[in-house]
Amino acid sequence: MHLTLLVPELIWPEPGDDQTLAHCRAPGLAWLAARAQATRQPRQPWEEALFACCARPPLGLATLRRLGEADRPDDVAGDWLCADPVHLRFHHERIVLADAGAFAIDAAQAAALVDGLNAQFSDLGHFEAATPRRWYVRLNAAVDHVAAPLSQVAGRRVDSELADKTGPLHRWLNEAQMVLHALPTNAARQASGEPAVNSLWLWGAGRPVDMPLPFDAVFGNDPLVAGLARHAGREARSCPAGLADLPASSSPLVVLDTLLPKVVYEDPEGWLQALAALDADWFTPLRGRLGRDIKKLDIVAPTVYGLLRWTLGAGARWQFWRGQRDVATLAGELAREGSPA
Image 1 (cartoon, rainbow, N blue to C red):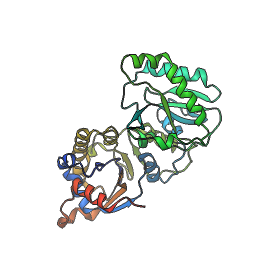
Image 2: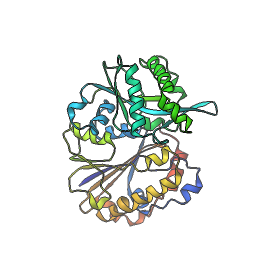
Image 3: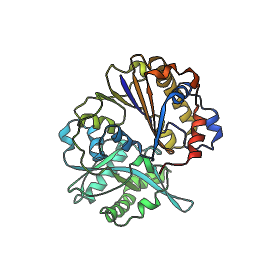
Image 4: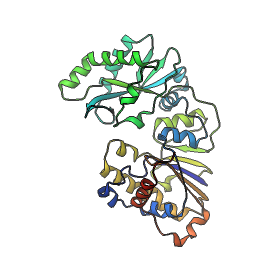
């Protein structure tokens, strides 16, 4: 087996946060990192890293994510954008974006807000809420709209992204913000002390490319992973609980994304707990199987330090002199080296 693990935010993004890193216990990962051949590339969102693993251009992310949660492929015909609900707020004279993972929104509220948008923007396309947190617009005509995936901007400043007045959807997005502000559902949310859904994040334009996947099985819980697998004619499989539950295959890709929301929402305690679980369920068991049924292992980690890749072959288990490289040491080394060009 040649196993590839895609693990977004595997290294805590604040190397100076001694309190978090001092409590980091991941002996399995430390053992693997000490024996791996490591490479480092410029930073990428995890969605783009997923496509790089699959040797595909990152096109049509909205279409593929929608396909990942559609009942039938025919439901996804046409041109799509992710139109995810967000709350914009001013913080220290900067605009900060909070996605729906940072506040509660139920299905009834999402449906009412989407209905309000559809009443005003039928000339643009049709909105739908696949879930309260994940919205889409099926466009009447394709647009050339370049925007970062929501995971890259959630919880961060978005001044520069919102200041671009040359994009084809800029005027429409301003109008959408006014419509959302005036909807009764948002007024009720604000009256109850909840943040208003006062904007959308539009991303994922384009149409996916038809190319074979270099993996015979793909596992992950994000609908983008499922949609990518389905588009390539593969079964969309949920992520196993651990290495022991991974079905037999020759070249599986497993997306382990439990660390990602902990970093996005600045939850160091949750990140430590999620890393400990990954170490117990995946990294430590790999020590015993590397060189046996697993002949090669790639760990791909999109992080703030860059896109990290660790590769281990069958002989790594015999490198007793390598010891361990703990996560705190790795974070310090990466920070001192600076970001790759």
